Length: 210
Image (cartoon, rainbow, N blue to C red):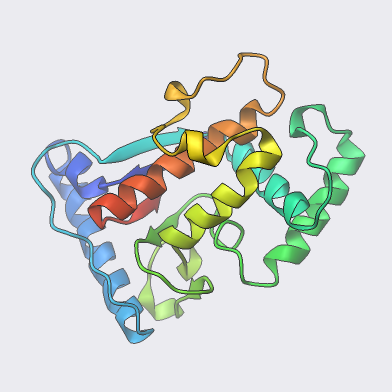
């Protein structure tokens, strides 16, 4: 089991599973209305009929936790060691810092469900927490695509990625990385999310965690 990330989910589902596509279309409409109440003007474009998502990818849930840890350590000015080679006791200590930083409710990478929910291509400073009656996936935590992209790019050098060189890379398969890279997990998650952000901003569609 792992996290799937899709931009253009309606395009991906429309041809293959219209019933599920209709469900997601309703949820995206509810999301748009709830965001409108918060002063955020965005709505998912109608399905294009292409039958293909603008971006899709995924990785084990742990990869996202490793990337979040790297983000927090880098933000705090600490050395970012690969999760794969970090002592478990130290890793647990680092996770405590991640939890503390998450409670600041300012990071779009941190303040988001691990397994469901949305990022939308609209600019707002802090993650948005929607009321329960909005009934959207991911506990009502919604992030800004642009703000997520900025956080990813700030973290990139700490895990051995040049953000400018990666700007044209769509995903991990296109990245030129050695098979034994100690930051393999962090980089894999970074490239999937980075590609999703680029596709979201280019198409106006939400990034969907599912």
